[in-house]
Length: 308
Image 1 (cartoon, rainbow, N blue to C red):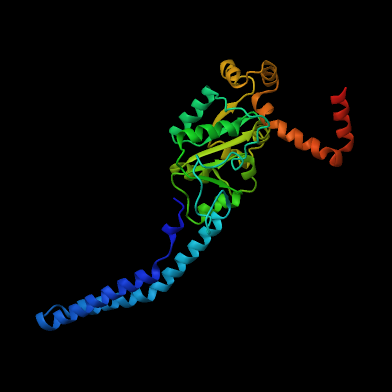
Image 2: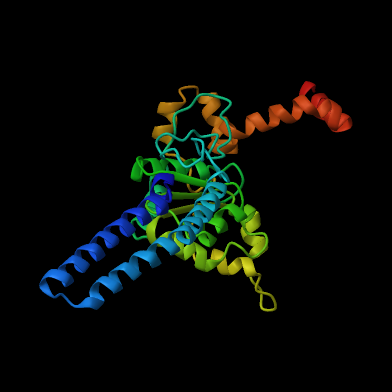
């Protein structure tokens, strides 16, 4: 696990202790050699080891300090880290939905399960495979992934890297986490450059649960052809894919009726989709609030159509 206490260098104190012990042993062997005839070379070798340990201690300490400094820098590049070194990560149960990059809901509604797709994600994570949820924008990929992660790993720390460099930095500093949930929402944000590799995803998956999401449009863009195989495809091919469709994978009518008693609202949700209705409304409201200044003509047309 990523923990600054486990990486704190103790070179100076440990070196001093080892040196003192070896010198005491050397002194004891010298007395033994004088009084009971112990081999003369044992005290010489032991004293020499004490000198060597004392001499190499500062080098070891400097190396450990350099590694700790690098670790602190990496920790400060992940979301949700707390503490002076950013080494205390929230658990999956503690992290809030905004940190997971889930769109805020415009109406209060309990989470509506999509049982079949949740079971697919569970099975892949139980098998120790990285999971990639693919679907259109606002279809509910991230919300579904969060529900499964909270059910399976509520007490695990969750690591949300701010950038590809932050994630690759863990690998370069030889600090890959253990027993964490690695959260890669909108995976295409991490695919620029060549630092996120298939090998890194595989190494992360060996000791962690790796969950990612990707919009359908980005999935189509990265698809290989007979003439071109994008380098990003090698990363995507490591993941087990779970697709989420607005129509085929919508909540059951019974769950929707229990959560939304108003039949008119249910009809709207059935028409546009649960994720779009609950989450996209805030985006539309924000656009309208800014539209008069940023896009005055479009703003006027939308208002005119609404009034009509």
